[in-house]
Length: 128
Image (cartoon, rainbow, N blue to C red; front, side):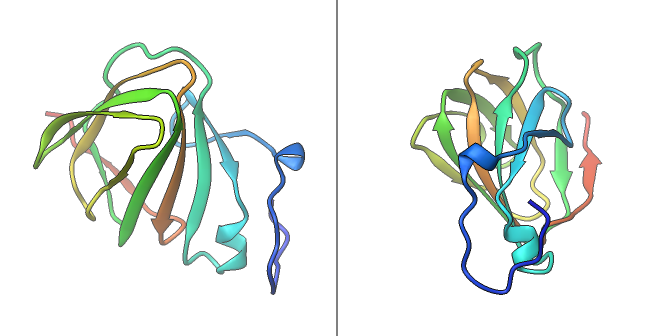
């Protein structure tokens, strides 16, 4: 979805385009919020497009806000300040700006909504 909108809109699943993005093992569906907010906010759905082969590597994002809501499946995550957590469908989590984190494992049906501010931001490798 890339057309600029000046009012309310709906992002219908039947019209959805799933694209490659930051991680090659995930597909990304833009919900149109990036365009509607002139890049202030990103809302997209991320889903697994291949089985998990192990930890993804510690990294951080230079952004102002990031939260996730898990739609399907489960994942094991590790955060520098709280350690390892397991999230399941219906769970939500907030990631403070710059927090070092890693996806350790996820289910084949993993699907999550992610919201960030701003829409575009750098990702830094934080490998230990």
